[in-house]
Length: 193
Length: 81
Image (cartoon, rainbow over all chains, first blue to last red; front, side):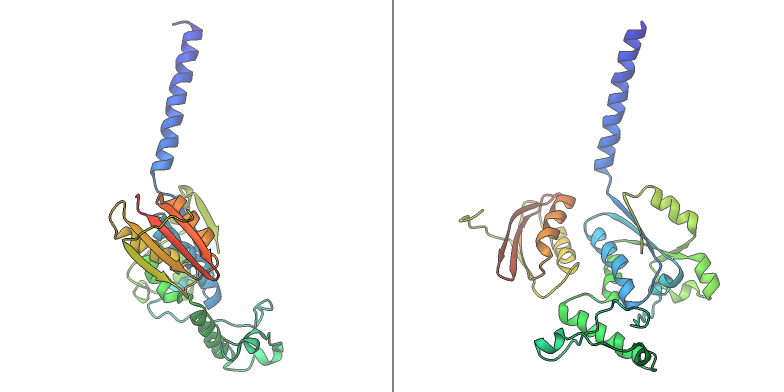
């Protein structure tokens, strides 16, 4: 075989292999890898919305729940929200006439530290979500489970904050940084929330 | 698709729901349908127009028609996958 023939053959094989790789890429489902690091009522939404939507679209999805995101796996889900240290949070009422609901209340920080304020803010936010037709965190999590989203609890966080596997929903697995990285290395979309 | 009358095999009303509920409900419904069947979905979520288009591209199902009438959005989807 001359050098010229050899080069031609190599090019042919290379083109074939590349086409094959492209084909494999379009055939396999897309994959989403998320890290959920926050567990408040507001911040629980983004990862669970993305995961449940991707799951519904037939994507492979994995969420790594770490640090304060870990309590989102608890059987007894109790997400709360605080306006304290959240100056961009719109403070509006979910009831009353339209004009009243549009009013933004300038709540002084000093008031936000009163015991019970978080409970009130949490119930107002939940009511707002309900009024607007947004799913609850529990519902979104159920949808994730239904669409086989891989829920990974961070082992290290469990040790640090004293959680046991029994406290979490049955559909989760336990893993560490390497587990997530391996999963994420084959993902088309990776996000840290 | 103006002037064309589309008929549906199934109707799904997602009025009053916000993202991602309409998309999730559509996915579920389409999964349970037969290939070639048509789903009509009604939504009031202003984001549903862009999202339904993306959903169709991602899932390989066909968005036959998407129209807005005031605050109501109507979609016709043919199951292809």
